[in-house]
Length: 318
Image 1 (spheres, rainbow, N blue to C red):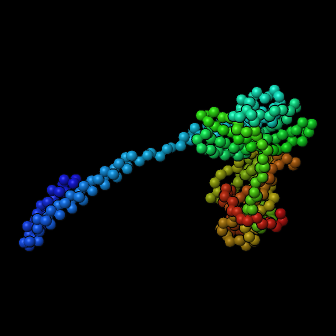
Image 2 (image 1 turned 45 degrees about the horizontal axis):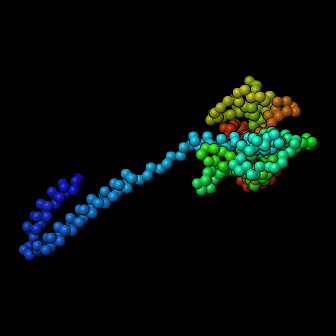
Image 3 (image 1 turned 90 degrees about the vertical axis):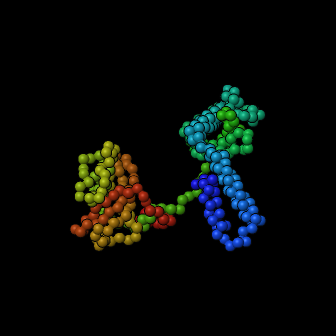
């Protein structure tokens, strides 16, 4: 409802109240004060609405990050820093002009170069950090890992170097010469939360072993009686392995496999050795959910992805 419509309704009502009021209740001065007060409230309301409207209309639209541009820039920085480190590590006197074109401060160039290059391989980015130093460009710190074989030494080493790159107007230059840095990482004091072992010759162990052979090998076997009706999936297609054996079956807490509650789910972690031959194989950890049937056998309900973790602890037998 507009302000004009409200005035049209309010005026007749106010007139009736004045007309029906006792004589002397409304004086000319009091009526004048009422009119002034109501007029002020009306103007204040209009001003408040206009201010609110302008705040909404003039509110700056949040800037949407250009993720494609950011990703492209990161790729360029990584490519540049990899090339710069490669030239710097393997460079000799003849590479000085190339390095000169890649640095922002030519006074930082080496005054003397080695005469025998270093053999390197497997250059990869280990870490990437950016910082805006305040309007003079964007600074990037790129940590790169590289395998180095020093001259006259056949022993390779995996080392890490930090390359500082400055970006300005889409141009990239090395701000300083690379430097050797540490790449140690804190350990993780966590492990799978399975602290007991079940014999692989038990009823549970034999079922899991048969399931592993059918699930992970390239044979024509089916999962058949080893899985329950809730199991989804099939043997891994095109598996390169010709054998699969369950080496360890772990549970959370001690479990009596012959007296476990029928139908109750049990989480296990199975270590499986999958082999190409007797001497070539891989060892895998496979989390599963199983249950015991009413005839004392076991069935696999699922091969799981989530593994419950806990603080590191010694597992008996390991």
